[in-house]
Length: 151
Ligand code: FES
Image (tube, rainbow, N blue to C red; front, side):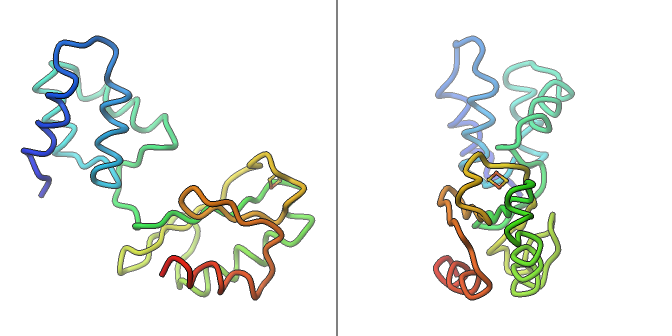
């Protein structure tokens, strides 16, 4: 159940302004760590914006999620340069340590794991990004150390 008052408070912060839908949705994402269906209904009724438009935006932007995600987001780069340097092993190891597959979230909602394309720092490969922290030249031992830091 979403905290209706919190959603209304976020909407109030933008009341009377134009072109705020993306920023408002980003605020909801930051508050709940995802954008619950109930929050979308509240935004739709309060701003008189069709739900379909909100869903279109929320599913377009990678920074927004329409399903619950873990407290920490782990992204493993599977771009060519990182693959050449062992990204598949890093991804497999990360998944087996967390006991999830890419696209899944741990049962305790601590971590979500995703495979992503080139993150633009190929010389550091293989690269893992946890939340906003970049970890480069990741080794098998490094995977454990990185996960422990956020556990
Ligand atoms: S391929 Fe991984 S950062 Fe470019």
